[in-house]
Length: 302
Image (cartoon, rainbow, N blue to C red; front, side):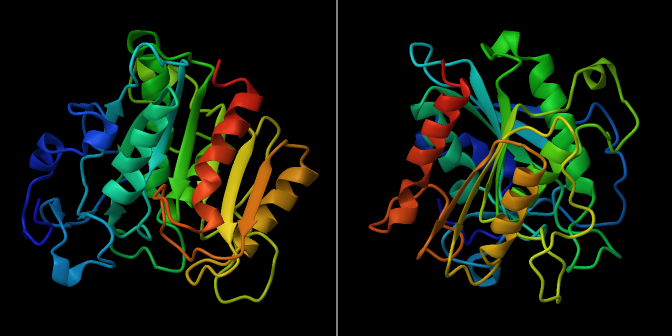
């Protein structure tokens, strides 16, 4: 596919979805009607052209106004009953759809886990400043957890083995979903919202926005919390990350330790930012193996 095509529709993208994550994902709307808390005009949903891409390493989707989930199920013979909702990164402006979405689903399928890619609303709406995380995506993620749990038996998923994983800004979104499960950010829409929005585990890979902007501190931003019932969280970062330094994950890990939430932290010397699950000769590309071992230890890969 030529990623320089300026106005490819996302529905066409799904027709040619990466075979790494299966050929025909089930695509469902996150919301039954109007998207709660949304506003402003963004233009038609599209794939960014090569000239305007943040990087040339991913297919970038923007102008999302109708959030969806794309459900990639593992082979029945491999199915462990676990599922992970995947939040691609992109600074809350875009979504790195293949790098931090479909390719991650492919890896999860390979270890017997359902990979469910969340297309949450981007870019930031008017008046939402860049130094702060966008508020709308949290609503989409909370609803996605409840939606997946409501369909768990239909998809061969154990409702007590549903997690959330995110990359960069999506890592922040995964943390927020894991720590705000007791404060649903929207009014219930239907019976699906009677189902818990608490993930059973979370993974944040090179997350950002966990520390205050423009402040030299290793103390978490004031809106980051670890209430009772926070699920275990797996954290990955590199020492040389130029976008969001490892202190984001380190501060989060220390807060989880203080709250007695059993979690795991990996900080690698090299790797930068935005590597997803792609293999290189750097040790950081082994993080998926460590994550799989962590999930097995939690009893999620039975």
